[in-house]
Every structure is written in C-alpha cells, then in structure tokens.
Length: 248
Image (tube, rainbow, N blue to C red; front, side, top):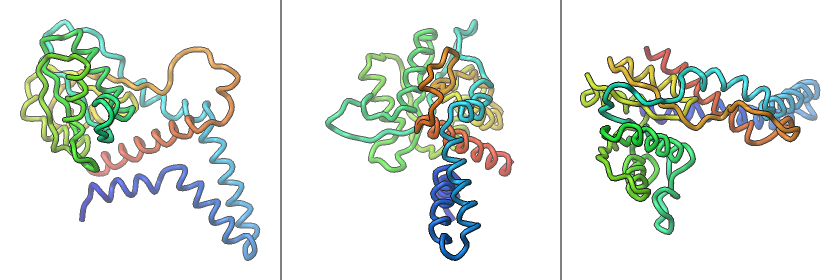
C-alpha cells in the first residue's frame, strides 16, 4: 500500500469544504424522506461555511501554529546550511522559474534569500521531489534562485516526497552542523519535530504568515474565501501533526 498517497487522500477528504459539500448533498438526498435530518444537515453546512470563512475563527485556529517560533534573525555563530523545504510549482516554459512557483514555494525561496543575505557563508539546500511535474520542486526553486541573482552554492535534495522524507534524507549531511530550516510558519512546528526526531538541531526560519498584527477594516469581518483557505490550512496541519503523533 502506498502510505504517502493514502495519507494525502485522507487529508483531502477531511478538509472543511468536503465536509460542507457532504452535508449539503445529504440534505438534498434526504429532503423528501428524512426532512428533519435534511434540515439539520443543511443548518450544519451553513454554520460551518460561515464559521470557517470568518476571520475570527480562522485566525484563532492557525495563529498558535504560526506563533510557535520567532522569525529568523542573524545568528552569532556561523551558519552551515539554509534548508528550504519543498512545496509546489507548475512547470510552464512560457514563464520564468520564479513565476512557476506556487505561493508557498515562492515565500520559502524569498525567506531563504533573506537568510542567505545575513549569512553568505551558508550553502542553500533546496528540497522536494517531482510528484506531479516533470521537474522536481528542488530543481525549480534552485532555478528561481539563480534567475533572481543568487550566486552562492546550492545543493538539491530532489527525492523527498514529504517533510518526513526531507528530514531523513538530509540527516547525514546536516548532522553536527548549524542550519536554518525554512518553511511556512504554520508548517514549522511539524517540520521542526521531524528534524529533531533525526537528532538534528535546526534554527527555525518561518515565513508566509497568515496572521499579522495590525488594524482590520470592516471588510475583513465578512465571510471570505481567503479565510476558508486559512481554515483548510489549519486542518491540513492538524491532521499532519496527528499522523506524526500516531507514527511516533
């Protein structure tokens, strides 16, 4: 059995939108035969859709993950490596390499460059396999770094399917080194745990924050698809951490 595929499939089926659509479909199917059940199902679907799309709910869910580690600041000791964890891209020869990166990969690449500007002595390691593309995410991020003028050393780790793979495959190189671990802030707690389970001691370099301090406008308090995406990201990380805990 392909456990990687099974994990991804279960994770998708447990997303809020799937639950909402299931409840709506159930309401339609039972509208004539079980009207009470249909009404309850439709009420729950509406409640979840509104709640998961509201900034107060989405922020309160994801903020604890994002606030676990502070942003990266210049270290007093030498930094050996900057590890940019893989995310996603779509290869398109009509676009530049950086334009082919999805937002999560673009955010991680920019943070990697920021850390490299503080520590030019460090070697960047890009990571991520070619799951649904002809080019690995590690290679595409490397191409984007070069395209944007980065001239330092870059090593690619293009066999890793997920964060657990990244930690295991990079462990031999990173043992007894000082390195920064770059990934999205909501994903950082799970990533740090995987690398620490390999006996490594990374310094967190989180990026791509959903929740930022600052005043909100009245428009922010309306249900919004961006907030629903934020809630889905929380559930993805929640079930990822649950899987991590069960395996350990």
